[in-house]
Length: 118
Image (cartoon, rainbow, N blue to C red):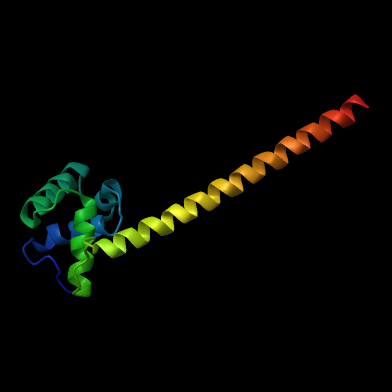
């Protein structure tokens, strides 16, 4: 396994990588035959050294280093407007579709009530 978090000790790096890949702390502890408190301490130290605040930032850093590409959400204004318009269209269509379902349900209830009365 090639080292990615070279700032960390090998033991701490394994813990950090497993956590970044989605393993739960208890799973890591069982896999490494360590106490959960040890895993917590290793992760706390890794967060401090790598200057990340949580597992999401740790995972982002891991994949950025592996891929050699910086992931960013800093989009230009035109891209943000385009995405917002697309999401608005999707929301409007889903709302329209939902209203159609409600109308069909109302019609079904009315027809069902008429059959029951007959």
